[in-house]
Length: 336
Image (tube, rainbow, N blue to C red; front, side):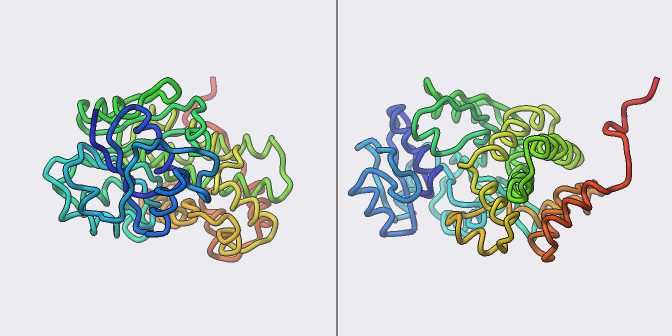
């Protein structure tokens, strides 16, 4: 049995706390919101973020960050990506040397272009930053539906420790050393999912969805490889796997926001209606900045940025994507 604290009580943090508690670990859930903690204590359920999922009585809840961090075998960083840096800053003085922090959010910081584990390493240098990611919706994990994830860490023993914490009969966890590739796949797929949702909002069909997923993973892979990620991460669960589930499911807040934008709502109106952090919006600018830095053509990511931040019509952006110069699908495949 391990002592684990989940830092962040959103839908994903709540679902993962249930997995950990069901696996007989000693679990504490932390939130900065007093009302949220009181609700979880009294209702044993997150009424707004994960309704219908009853949480084990063994889970403890607290707003005390020092108490949450102290003496734990692992800390699960489950706050939304825009709040990872500020939360890490607050945690720093309470984290022991060598303490494992497992990032489970997905995103890239706008101004620095840093991944979330890189932010944790910068703000809490004494910690061991790892990642847990893959094609997963909290709503399904909370209902104990079959799910697969990947635990990423620089050292094999840390990845295996995370694997052992979470793996159960409905949640299969693989291990990987490619922390960067895992994080890039998880962050960039949210931007492509916005594009898939926008196409849905415009009334496009399955053909368009398949094109966006396929050309989207091509864009993600090109950038990820240029940055040092491994191809296996982009063709595996944390790449194409996560992209498929995020582009196709109504559980996906990024797809839902994209649908609203495609129907004519502004970025802010869409985010307000979804009522959750739409992480693809925060990662879109960073993705475009990285594409420019590494000189990688990312036309879908570029179109999403133009729609979000330059007031370009979604219909016009789609027409421009379709009307680009003719080219071969695989430029590296030679003719006989």
